[in-house]
Length: 156
Image (cartoon, rainbow, N blue to C red):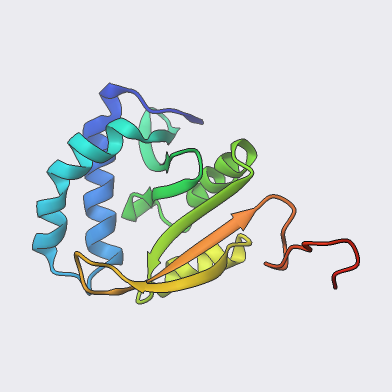
C-alpha cells in the first residue's frame, strides 16, 4: 500500500535513505552521506511531500516531492529492490503531478536506466556542488513520450 508518510515513519525513511544512498552512490565518500543525515531529517523531509510503500506493516521504500514538481528522493530498501516498488511509487507520483523533474548522478547507471524506462528524458548535465560529481537533470511530463512537445500548430 502506498500512503502519506507520518512522523512515526521518519526513522525508517532515514534508514532506507542512508542504506540505499550508500549502496547506489558508492562513488561518493561514505562520510558525505553520514553528514547529510541531519540535513535530510531536519531541513529536507519536513518540506517535502513524502509517500511510503508499506507492505505487511513494513516500509520498504519512499518518494519525496518538493514544490509539487521535483523528485528529491526515490529510494527502496536494498533488500526490496527490483520488486517494482520504485515503479509503483513513481507511477503514484505521476498520477498526482503533471510534470516531474529530478537529479541523478551520471555514475548511477541503474537509476538512469530506470527513469528512462519510465519516460524521463535527460535535459541537462551539471556538476553537483557538494560532491563535485556530474549529475543529470531529467524530466517527465504527462503526455510527452518522445521528450519533445510541439510549440505551435504545424510543428513536426
